[in-house]
Amino acid sequence: MKTTGLCLALLSAILFGASTPFAKLLLGDMSAQMAAGLLYLGSGLGLALVLGARAALRLPTHDEAPLARRDLPWLLGVIATGGVAGPLLLMLGLARTDAASASLLLNVESIATLLIAWVVFRENVDRRLLFGAVCIVLGAAVLSWQGHAVLAPGALYIIAACLCWGIDNNLSNRLSGVDPVRIATLKGLVAGSVNLLAALGLQHAHLPGPALVAGAAAVGFLGYGVSLVAFMLGLRHLGAARTGAYFALAPFVGAVVSLALFPAQGMARLLVAGLLMGIGLWLHLTERHDHLHVHEEMAHTHRHVHDEHHQHDHGPDDPPGEPHTHYHVHTRLEHSHPHYPDMHHRHDHDHEDGHSHAA
Image 1 (cartoon, rainbow, N blue to C red):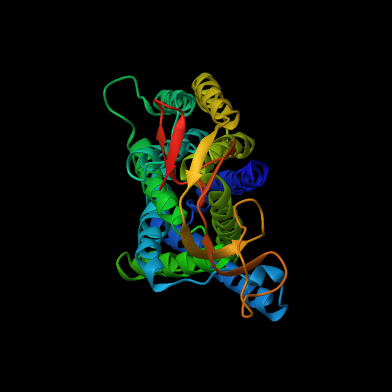
Image 2 (spheres, rainbow, N blue to C red):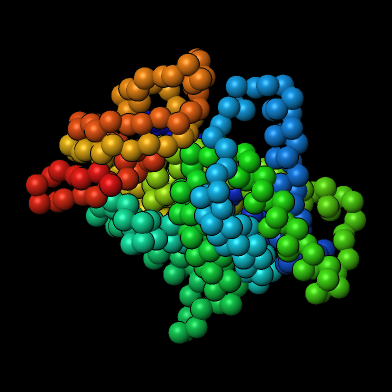
């Protein structure tokens, strides 16, 4: 499970990281809000085409858990924080910051995700993850410090965007059992439309030329749409804190691409920050979590195969073959194996006796 989740999180990171310097290129010809709207609208439209093709071809991946009414509050929070506010703040920050520094500053997103998962949603976070987080924060401080007690305005916008995406990632974790393509499509269409209409109506901006619109749509589809789908699939296997930690590769990808596209500024500062952040990322990637834990009885609907956590009977109306999606009940189970806070391992930890108690 970790290998699958790790690969998905790293794919998400690579796509998003590479998109940041290309998004900065777009800002030379349009406002921050227009760019945010076009990027997310491109994401939503591209994934809508994927949904249509997937349904028309009756691909097996079409068999995913649908959205339920209880999911709507989480979905609205995801759209507001990660789809509307986050991209707008990032574009405002990119307009005021060089691309390489901005890319590395995006490491703050993994810290925000980890801290919110730990403090608010009670995911287990050990000293190794916390020390790695400290290294990443120090690297961000090196990039954003201006030699006196004032942070650069561009850095503050990017840090605010990372906080929004940290909230978004934790809310998305509540939706990780639902079809990720459908979630990402709705997020892109709604959030992109809000920012685009705001740019056209409130700022009286005009749409850029067809080539720029197509470029923004392509960057948005890959860097925001496909990346988000991979990220949400990673959440299923790893939980929010660890998926966010592996996602910390994104800023390094963005920094490398930025150095290829833009003249280097403050190379010594970039190298020091990159080293600190690299140490933090290595600590996160090499973590191992293994202890005796208890799964209390629970029931839900999601796509699954019959592994050690899915030993249940089937009724005549349940779908055949695997993987499949249906409502099922987990009986109480106690065992020990390497695991992460996926949808089946959201339990508390008792550090005094080394055992855990399932939530």
